[in-house]
Image 1: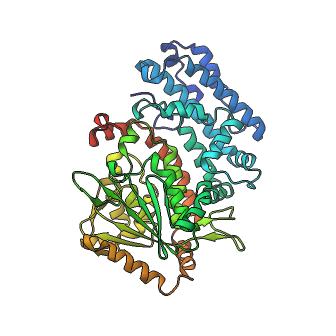
Image 2: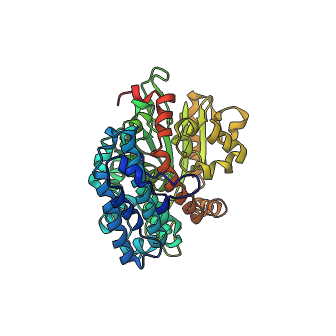
Length: 482
């Protein structure tokens, strides 16, 4: 197991300069006195205004990186060398956190021109890497990290979680970032004409088809039972945008494609969650979680913000949202189950399994911790997230997650009937009613605060040895090929 960054100074809180284990570095062949002097130079919360603090943290992080570069690569390190890396990285992450607690708002204003320019999360992080070197990894560092399997990663992505979490914790900056993530992608804007002219857009693993007044989003990843991964994420967001942008579409429908699998040959599967094989082999970055839940999942729930600077459009600003129907067949696992919490109507084939395997995976199941209790109650939500409770469509307790249960052969008819029922009287008040429901259930600031916590905690989960162990024990990940 390679070293993972983000270690704290023990159960009593962050490591202090006095606790910095210089002798650990000395045993790894690094100069203890020089390292101790470096630790003592860590900039504190009183490092001055933004410009001065940014310069100070850049210098400190550069020196720390210099120590790390004197050590062998993490995958080849001895236990002593890994311990030295852990001590160095812990000090560096604490310096990042200290800087961001004081200057996240100033950094965000600097990068966005005082909230006059919208940057998506990935663009914000790239800009921050240039403006404050060392604060988050560069594109080159991320590319090198992406080439490593999950057990061998060096943990540099934690810095991304720290930055996004601190930005989201600032109300003005956080709302603006959420608004930026609700804007349509350039890919969707570029292909909208194709959808309007042809009625279909093939995005590879995702296909959008306009059928009457409905837009069908079909995820097709048959080798992995329609799991989500780095290859499906961008196309799925583009597809959601297209359905929301096309004025001829009134309702979005989510459905899994036909799979070729020994257990479900020639049948549709709604989704089997995260592609754990690609996760273990390092292809799924930490940023996947943020782009997914701040991106297409949130767009399904809150709609597109075409002019809005924040999560909810103000008077005179343009937004668009539509009703969504989920057609669940066979499985709604993990991320697929999370989608049931943001759509307006769930049709499930009898016998379909609905569950969140978070306990066996070791990660946070998106925003389910925020949303699932609204559907099934706090106790059942804890059982699902912490103990692996499942629901089966057609059984009484699953009625809290499903609006309709139909026989598998009746799904096509049920989807068409629901589309007709929702559209035959017009949908003038649909967006207004959705906004009114959200006002009491999940106003944008509640979501913002949740995602601020999620950004940091999910980064720690993603980089945890426990996740690797869970994947190897429960998924046999080491024995599976891409």
